[in-house]
Amino acid sequence: MKQKKAVVLSSGGLDSTTVMAIAKKENFEIFSLSLFYGQRHWLEINAAKRVAAALGVKKHIIINTQLDKIGGSALTDDIDVPKDRDMKKMGENIPATYVPARNTIFLSFALAWAETLNSSDIFIGVNAMDYSGYPDCRPEYIEAFEKMANLATRAGVENRTLIKIRTPLMEMTKARIIKKGVDLGVDYSLTFSCYDPSPEGLSCGRCDSCILRKKGFKEAGLKDPVEYA
Amino acid sequence: MKQKKAVVLSSGGLDSTTVMAIAKKENFEIFSLSLFYGQRHWLEINAAKRVAAALGVKKHIIINTQLDKIGGSALTDDIDVPKDRDMKKMGENIPATYVPARNTIFLSFALAWAETLNSSDIFIGVNAMDYSGYPDCRPEYIEAFEKMANLATRAGVENRTLIKIRTPLMEMTKARIIKKGVDLGVDYSLTFSCYDPSPEGLSCGRCDSCILRKKGFKEAGLKDPVEYA
Image (cartoon, rainbow over the protein chains, first blue to last red):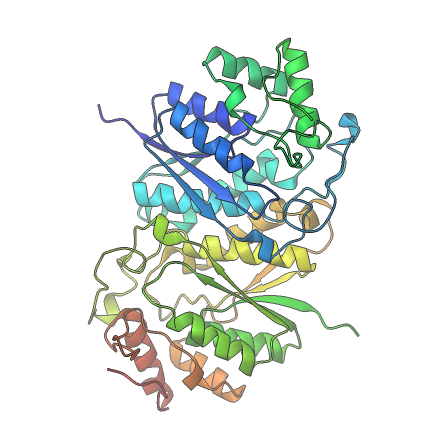
């Protein structure tokens, strides 16, 4: 039987790498897509390259979306990345690291590629449990995107392959995600999560992304293989 | 009263230029966005620059979306642009010039910019009358995008400005669009519509886009100021 194709959005971080391992376990042929969006550093993209090689993807493409021309986020603009936020309050308001419409842009590119490949499965590592409170990580958003995607495309109109946005991590805690990845043989030393690394490329340990990652490893009872400044 | 801001998607073609004139007439401050998507030529983008200058936009940005890395269309890939198609049959099937998820990608960038500007109005020149049968030009698609957009963004979550996708040309024939533009003072010699121009930059007159444009001017009883090969 011919292997089914999946487009996997890969940021080089913990979540998207786990998602890729899940898609691989489901026997998909993986086409991984990384979008540089004008963030402060290329370390994420380098991590995505390492992950693509380690997981043996069929093809990995990197697109520079130039979101820094639009700005509006601490990750793309001259705004400080918030540090040492209280984890319990992360879901309550949308932080400065939110990049306007980022997941919509990411999923749109994935949709274009899926349509070109005649693939119906797009995997994205969004999570509504241990997350920063971004609007475009919620299940109702993903559902609305999927609906739109099926009206947007040739496949949807011709009633062929319907697009499914696959979010296997949606209801998982960070600790569960990490345990799942370890079960699937993911080497988390390849991944990179920090929003604001040191000039030497070490993770800051204090941005939302580092805080959530560290908490996850702690709760999973595992050692985080990434070095912190 | 402070002028409201609108993001207008501008391809440099007839439709998006008319839409921009309509937004201007409605007294919006215009932020125009052109997306190069790896099409065969930059003539459209040059036209978009001329239009932005002529209509006095507040800011015009051009983003190269690198859709040629994804391919899958006669406009971005090594596939012939169909010529001399029967106009009556254009809406019946999706032609090779369809670019997978193009409008979704375009609208996603517009959404990111609108959110950054705190604007609630995104204008796009889609049209379901005289069109090539692209799935992402239909009203049901636009409606689904708008719904998704309001779940994707900070504004939607915080119940502030709701995003509206404005499609003033949706139900207009090409002839009516042209007459409307002429009423608003649009100089159509600035615009460019051809998918496959000659090496000298002349419009081919035979692709869907040229055929629809020529028909529009003819039915409007006006002379098309653009030169054909």
